[in-house]
Image 1 (cartoon, rainbow, N blue to C red):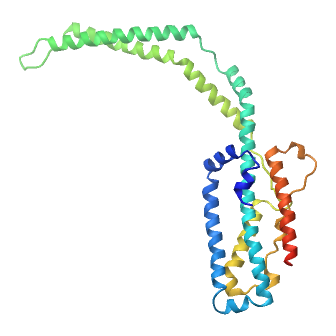
Image 2 (image 1 turned 180 degrees about the vertical axis):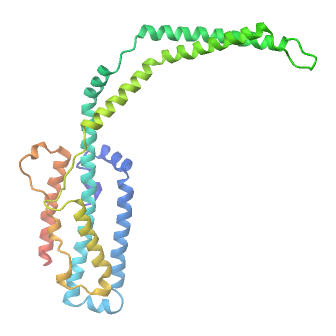
Image 3 (image 1 turned 135 degrees about the vertical axis):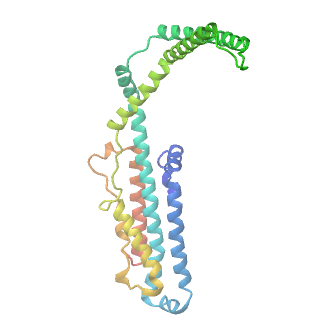
Length: 291
């Protein structure tokens, strides 16, 4: 059962978006490629030389059976962890969205209110002073262009043009200040959003646990790595039965116990599916004498 199957258990549309945005798909694709290349190389070696002879021996036959199950185990570790991380990430985003209305209400109570009347007055003032600034600019340009020319051929600055320039500057400053005040509502909305996000970051935290009864994610990665090493080196080490990684212990999902009712529904469904797969895989290992 691959990751897409697990995703079907945890709200596939939302989970697929999380999978793409968090980069899980890209990392998993690289791991799949590396893993499959190792197994392909091992199988190629089985057709050549001394390894081809050894594979017919009891130890070789046991390794061949083990190799088939090892590939499934390696994939299971990877796929389960990806689906598990997505389920908890989905739970985190769901809790954040559930807490957002309260966070926004808390933020609005802390951020000063903005008078709608003052905003309207500031907007009107900004429009008026913008028009006045434009008129004063036209007057100033006309005065500069019609100013007397000095003996050196340069335009002279007249007191009237200086006054027009000063008034234009003052009008532009008032325009900027008015429109700044008119945008107070938007600034407040932005500030409320920032305060709410800070509240959510401090009070709604990610949570997770291992899907395995005893091993955490890092330990499972180490098991996956050791499986790959055994397969990769098999053509030169001719592994005996006692050197093969025990696979049955991988299929040991956390049992349902006290507090399970507080586990998010997608996570609970994943655990149930993992336990069912455990039974199937452990039975298959027993049939092949590998449990």
